[in-house]
Length: 192
Image (cartoon, rainbow, N blue to C red; front, side):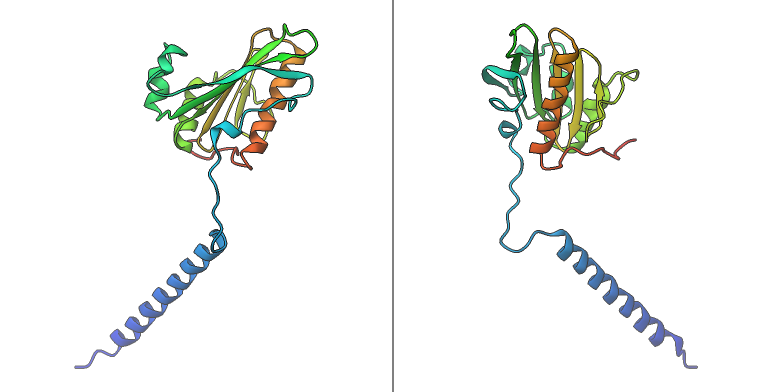
């Protein structure tokens, strides 16, 4: 007895595997940068708004840096939580209104080592009653603070004296960070 359907079935499977391999190669070619092009990862130090980047506001002093070993000295009660989400580095600065210097806010940018760490800390810090800041990232804002995340970064901006001018400057600072991330701060579909 001769079974003739096996060779045809084998050819069909072989052909399907060839098509799958070609499709996979095409996806890799389209999604990969051109040969010889290196896409430099965003460095946390490049993200803070610099001198005169926030209209009417100035950076006060030099930026500060914290690592896992000394994060406790900055946020003693929450350091364990950040470290549990794979915290790598914090880079931050204080900004003051050029008009009177009394209105101030701080911006802390946390490198969480990956997008899931940034998302996790954002979700754990976000107040459920908080409203979106309507920026190009998943965010949470009140008069007192603005939080958002994107890629491996989690950002906290906190006003020392809440007010309309301070809120507008905080929003402008957030948009500058998003722009410097080269579109890296988009809404996440993880765990929604």
